[in-house]
Image 1 (cartoon, rainbow, N blue to C red):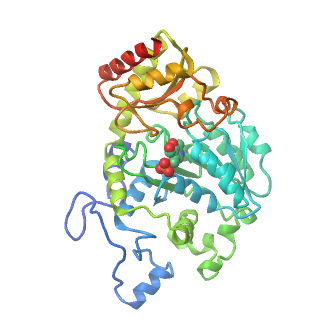
Image 2: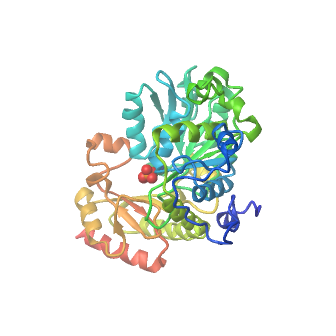
Image 3: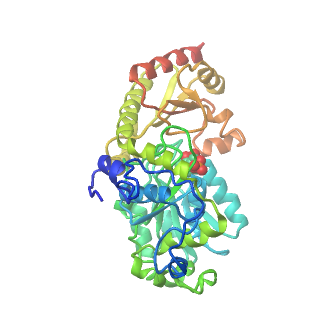
Length: 432
Ligand code: PLP
């Protein structure tokens, strides 16, 4: 196993896979199998009894997925990870692994729309309350906390506002009150290491930058192994009380010989077993393939975005450009504290001509793709007011940071001259 603290090396060599022990294959094999032959009945019993970790059934684990999980855990600095079918499944599991009806979590208001819906509607319907607080004031998390608060949740670099979350500040509040911080790091892989700033858990939609090529949906949860669930006692009943679905196992006790992996092991053995949001070996392979060049791509994403942000800010008809590089005051301080090596590839800008100009701009793009995705190697654009946010009222759109003339870009890794040329001709069309 190759050990390194450098992401460029870990993205290629981190985790459990070196060469396939039976074939010597250097690339991670796609283990397209549902099940695994047990050596004998004793072996099978030990695997089911968790005395030994090993492959049982691909809904719960798979060697290709394991290579992805261990590599992402290495990259984020965690102890173990779980790959699942989508980013949404990862977020759902992060919360459901700690909550029961009557419990609550405290979340930042600045969230991906799908997460917002999950928190405001679906979890509510399941009896889990999500208390939304403005991340501009980290102490809001403390004020919203009570004895049934099981976790804090936030995104590192949430769009459309693109204001970096105060990770260290809120993690410290959580550690004081015994509440773990879960970070969605989808928009800032490599650039930010939330676990280093005190977060307990990191999740990603691997659909985005990690996959990087817009081919496959997936999600991952990384357990930091740095949070004392046992000391939390009553705050974490799912981990500290006997689990009737696993012979009365108390997870924090049962996994002690295996390391500080109670949170992620319970997620795998209970939630993935029961809810079944397994990823596929093929998608795990695609995400591994993307991961191998992620550090290099992030460099180019960031350097291109920096140039585009500065260029856009000087264009007539553009009234505002939203990118961490152009922020000031506390927002800039947070960006500089938590993002290293670049400010990300996402940006937004406002067209003076409002919704009509936004639509003209999008329709005129020749190289940028008009899609609802982010984090593709290709440059992407969308006009939220007429698409992703069109079900919201103008007031609701404004509350989420979306105005009629707002355009969102995910800057790709093409040559910068071609990116700017496409934006230039589309801006001219928007002004006519
Ligand atoms: N988190 C963020 C920040 C996202 O942008 C997305 C998707 O856009 C998700 C989570 C959900 O991921 P997925 O689409 O893989 O379910």
